[in-house]
Image (cartoon, rainbow, N blue to C red; front, side, top):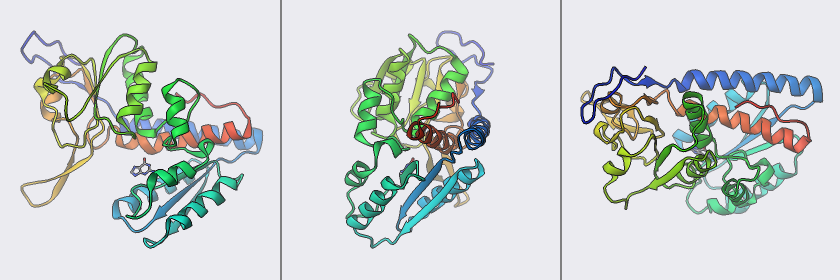
Amino acid sequence: MGGTAESGSVENTGAEIIDGRAFAAGLREKVAAHVAALKAEHGLTPGLTVVLVGEDPASQVYVRNKERQTAEAGMNSDLIRLPETASQDEVLDVVGRLNADPAVHGILVQLPLPDGIDENAVIAAIDPAKDVDGFHVINTGRLTIGQQALVPCTPLGCLMLLKDRLGELSGLDALVVGRSNIVGKPMASLLLHESCTVTIAHSRTKDLPEVCRRADILIAAVGRPQMIKGDWIKPGATVIDVGINRIPKDDGKTRLVGDVDFDGAVKVAGAITPVPGGVGPMTIAVLLKNTVTAACRQAGVPEPGTQ
Ligand code: GUN
């Protein structure tokens, strides 16, 4: 329902708000249906085990949500807690045990890990077939060269929202702002495989506003609150905001905002994800989907096409 924008002016009746919460709920329903079918037809119950080291409050919330949603989808859901003081060898031992357990199809080690534990070493120890985060270099490499991989959840969720809104992405100018291993780089790979013309912008990019104005698809994943302004957006563009930033309000409380100045961008974009309620809910829904995918591949049964 985005209106037309005259050249230079902002004549938009308001962008379509992409409802990630509803899309994620639909995806979770599809995953649950596939889990039920896998149980009935193959006697296969996908299982996800999350490893949480330490007491980081944000991680506790994420992990509780993952555990609950995994169980709600009918899968086996397990949480292994290790103390803040756990050594790297103890974490690696747990990962080794989960790699060897045939009932565990997905392993997720919650990040960040406490100081003194090498995240790269822990991720490298996860069996790539069970790496439902898609962080292992084997999965990263496979994604890059277009082979079958487990794909990081947040960028895959962004791609699903984009395809749902736009259908064919081929030939579109896509800009990814942010070059992290978890979001920016895999997002760029996914968009390249969709035959977009892909640009990755970052903190050293010259004239970022002008680079943004060329983008039909703009993915904001920089972690800087409201950095991308409304007048940087190409009229009618699809804007996916991955940022989740907490900023102070006048009343001393805080609120969540994205990396995009939503109030400005919503007047110019064709469609935009809100924060909260956009990309955020997609991440766990895709994690569940990745767990089903991993279970099917390990068991040698056909994968459900949930996209
Ligand atoms: N911490 C915050 N988000 C994530 C995630 O998607 N995966 C893992 N492993 N840790 C996280």
